[in-house]
Amino acid sequence: MPQLAFRQLIGANFSFQHFPLAFVAETIRSFGMTEIELWGIAPHLDLFHASEARVMSVRRVLGDSGLAVRCLTPEQVAYPINIASGDAELRRDSIDRFRRGADICAALGARHLFLTPGRGFENEDPRAAWARSVEALAEIADHARRVGVRCLLEPLQRVESNIVNDAAGLHRLLVELDADNIDVVLDTVAMATAGDMVADYVGLFGARIAHVHVVDGTPAGHLAWGDGSLPLGRYVGELAEAGYAGTLTFEPFGNGSYALDPVAAWRRCLDGIAPHLDRAAVPA
Figure 1 (cartoon, one colour):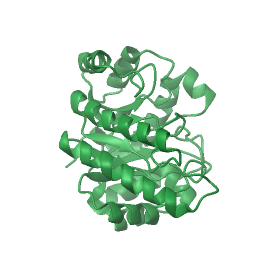
Figure 2 (cartoon, one colour):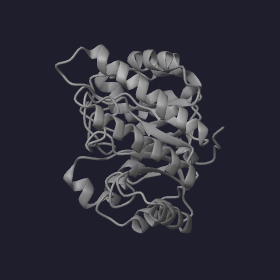
Figure 3 (cartoon, rainbow, N blue to C red):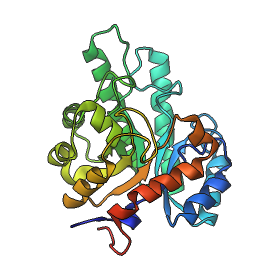
Figure 4 (cartoon, rainbow, N blue to C red):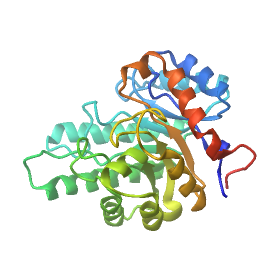
């Protein structure tokens, strides 16, 4: 039976927000990983304090531990960043910060800038928010292309966004965007809460799926492997059967115990996924 390669598994600083970046880098490297999804939050590297000196410091800290940045994921749900906002000033600032995010990706040598569709007002015509999201994503992706960066786009749960919540909606958005440098993220919780399956993503996006968040839930949540009820092993197996060649990582978040002891949460995730990964295989 096909298995994904261990080398496809990358680290991330989710749940490590109360620890210095050097500790994060050393921990992730000790797990045997050589790349990281860098969640763009303080004190590590957020879009509000990303001076050139700080960006270079982050690159140096990660590099000293033997880590490369695979993608930068600026916080964009909890922070006052919303590319589809009905507030014109907030929206313009959000777009400009993501343009800056693409520049940071280029400086860090990252392949991808992680994007989500934003959120409109709950009491407005949803078509208005959709149009703002399309326009903003197109502008950000165009800037990213000019600095040599690709983008990742992930649907969100309904409590997080009222624009794109499922694979079909994401497909419609990508068709309308018609941007050749935007790839797809499969988040197992977002997938499960939408009622989608791995086969739906594979059928709609194929090789365009470039990154996976392996997250447990009930079905919602950002739980460590085994703390929820999702069949994560089956999902990983189905991705392997489909010949998935991208990266995957964990996103334990929002549970107080994870922030207090993120290493324990990550070890549980690693133990959970270990039987489903081939350490000898090399990803395409």
